[in-house]
Image (cartoon, rainbow, N blue to C red; front, side, top):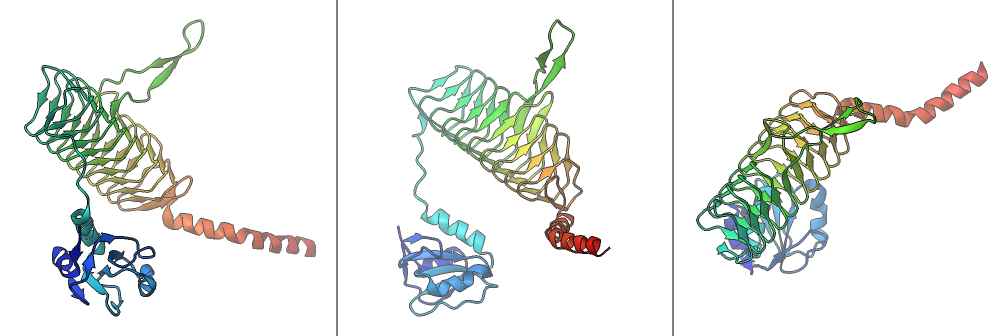
Length: 342
């Protein structure tokens, strides 16, 4: 498909600088874009690249000083990220989905309830007592165990598994390989017999996921030992995230890839967690916090604070430590000189 720069400006409620009849056929990064492509300038660090870019047009934030140049156009918006999301949606090819109804190869228990307009793909397994809300899509090979509940307008991609009695809210997306409700990791040593052994602690709780959540590929949310592991509304989890048993995440928690969160952690609304961060079990993270990538959190974090490092502490403190460490070689030279003089 293609659209003119004028049409794109109207789509994003942006101001047009330059010709409105330039045809845009696709989108590309600023350093790779060529004629007929729209690119994106979301911060000042990319503004200098516009002059050398081959793109025909660009979405640009209103705070960024850049001119279109001859034969090219800029679409000026208040929030370039949100504007780009609208344009991407407009140019996106249709998502491949199974047709409405239940594929003949799917196994659906008689006591399961399938809502109106659902799409149940090949080789799905839906166990007794399951409820699937209206207009939800299950791609090939999704498994829903006994009494699981899936909300309306959800999309579960191939290989996703929702274990027994767990619930997923409305408008959620589970990417391939997501597992909801596997047993929590709980064992205790028993030394009373002739040889020590590890006793599995039964995990009899559930997982409750709120509305408008998205979980990346191969992410796992463990069921609770008792009660529930909870994700609030609008939580967004990247690929390969592990949420331990009895964790409770607030609303709009955003977690990057390869994060591991130990059991019984609580994370407040609006907290951001960078990739490969680790949280020790029973840690409390307040509202509106940010945790840097690779951090190892072993202590509670108050509301609104930024932490990082290994082990993690306030980010300002960690930066001071890193600066001091870089100065150590020169300081040691000075110390050795003083010792020689003495």
